[in-house]
Image (cartoon, rainbow, N blue to C red; front, side):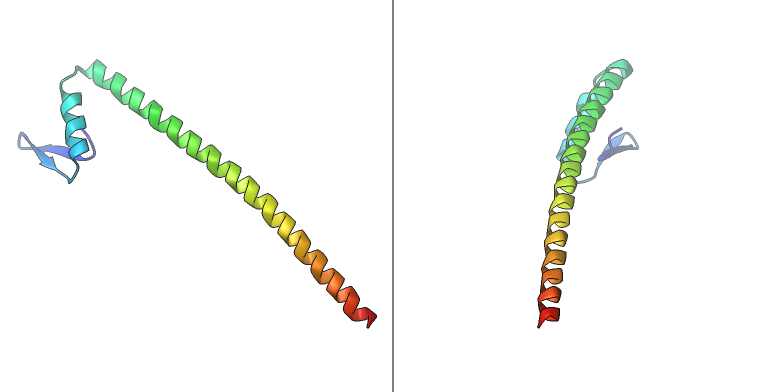
Length: 89
């Protein structure tokens, strides 16, 4: 059964999702083996999508860490230079 639709007393209970009902209708027509193949294929697609998103997030995180390190280094250098100039007065 789909997350979006459940069967109660022989009728479908709708949970505000037309996609869930249409997905349920197409999966109910097949045999259990067909449903397993469809479920496996859809899970594989979802895992691939999640993997791509995770890779993008990891790359963005690495880039952000590099930017932060550069900015922190520049900030520390600025304050050290200012401190040195202040002590020379």
